[in-house]
Image (cartoon, rainbow, N blue to C red):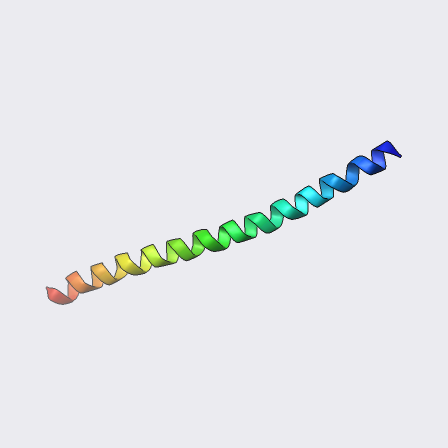
Length: 50
């Protein structure tokens, strides 16, 4: 019985970690996208000026 009780919280923890990782990945991807967009716009601006 104790073994079965110990398994449940671990599963809950894993699912919570997974959802947190998805959120963190989404945020990091959004930030990276913004940074890449700014860098690309600067590079394109310099190229067009030349």
